[in-house]
Image (cartoon, rainbow, N blue to C red; front, side, top):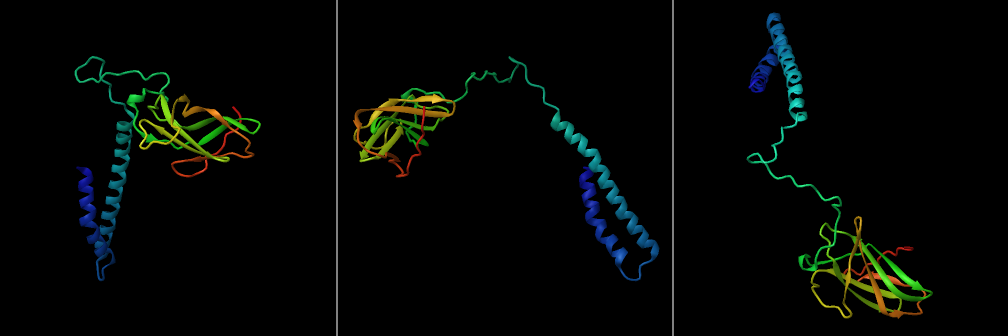
Length: 202
């Protein structure tokens, strides 16, 4: 309420005081009265600000008392699991989505490719399996990665278990027929046509 009164006072008295201060042929006493009025308004506004600030800060910092367990209207409090990170879930519960691998590791013996490991950011409810298809043209390896039911079928599609480590999901694709005699292999995301960065080492 006080804030409204101060606002109205500024709105009404400010034009009058300015007119008395700077108008022509005004008496000195009226000019003094206008100056005192403006000073009083300023002082009242500052005092109100100093009074209001501690009350607001106390309201923000003072926590509301929590409802006791079992009290009417109290919500049940369930502890979070120790590892709230993404964990693989059953395939039937998984939403269908295309995956974008952020890295690939190639298992090579000399120039012979025996396996591929794909990595992507894990979701909160990561699927326990993923579908992956590999087509190769020379050293170009085109990979399609999908969770849930794929929107389209790719030749050679395989369902492979998914592993989650921290916030990264991965799968290991073992090749039944190794790819041989290519000096350089390049992995490509079949959905986007973009190159997948290679990860070296374990």
